Image 1: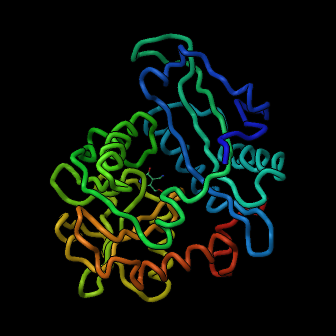
Image 2: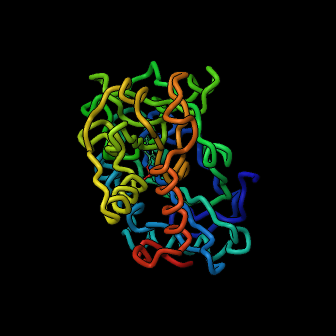
Length: 309
Ligand code: PMP
């Protein structure tokens, strides 16, 4: 899938893909002051196209901007419509689904850290398969605890999805991939498990207790994390939002990552220790199957999470 479509939504209107350039003096390019989202639209079981939890993603984009005091001159409704317009215009390209990337950033004008320039806002869409590979989704991936630490909650604004903060994620991801693993797991500044470079993390211990780090840890308030919490609790399972150590991962039965891009990706190995039986366990499989049903419109309980294009 080539990273290219026909149109983008830029600063209030649909323009041709090739008209999506910005100037090298763009403030955010130098200093990282921007916010973004990753959203997926799925082909539903009846052949339509539906965006998953669109409004929650747009709300998080606006919250991220509020956190860093980046003015976005559009309302939630306008950005929801912009996203849908972009898909409607290119429906012929995205019959099998799309990945959507709203981004807002400080544009050009003045330089220096004290500058306040007009904000640029764009929404792009492209085709993007499984982030950690189809094989990863089916069989699980190999992860490595990173030598890079998730930044302290008073360094990174963890409730925001802020562009500059992703240097930390990229360093961790590259280190893991260059060392022959698929993904990095980052610890917090106290040494407790936080999240992967672009996914939240769940584990199931030997007693069958499902755990995920709490939102007071330096983890993104993931929308997939929230979806998984909802579906597990709605089916009578308890999930503890608690901190745990890296060695708890070494001796647990199951680990899986959650994220819009990575969806539900099981982890079969951490730091060269096999996790459980070295293949996706029953909870991971249940969550993955349930998630794919929900996003494809096959579970009526969560029908209001889908916005049909
Ligand atoms: N953590 C980080 C650091 C991320 O970048 C992402 C992807 N947005 C996630 C977790 C998962 O969030 P979501 O489920 O909302 O995509």
